[in-house]
Image (cartoon, rainbow, N blue to C red):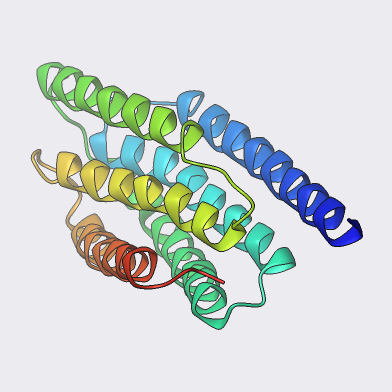
Length: 190
């Protein structure tokens, strides 16, 4: 009985912290200061998105001892901290890049659609007492959102210094999605 109570408490602790991190990420993304620069807007919304993934990864590391999930979480922390550093470095230059109002409207409309879908899928991710699986089911739509946001930005004229960052986000997030889907399909996630 004690083990069952511990598992329930651990799940509640994990999910409570996950919801808090998700709420902070959503707030950071939706209240970001937008300008007439798609490059700027992408960066100021992607930074809280990345911070959300970092927080979620630290959260699972508190509870999981399963090495495949720990490797994923540690990889997310490392990659997204580096990506935040890269975005912060190019933000002054990229903020000077201006887009036509029609481009901004089109970009923002698609960005809002992507974000709403991602937020809903992350809120509705299946939660049970298998925290490793929960983490991956939460992180897959998070990564899919990053890929779609990056692809959306690439449809418009953007700061040249941002292109490599977008390519890396797409590459690393697609690889992460593939790895998590593979683990969910082929294991009991301990």
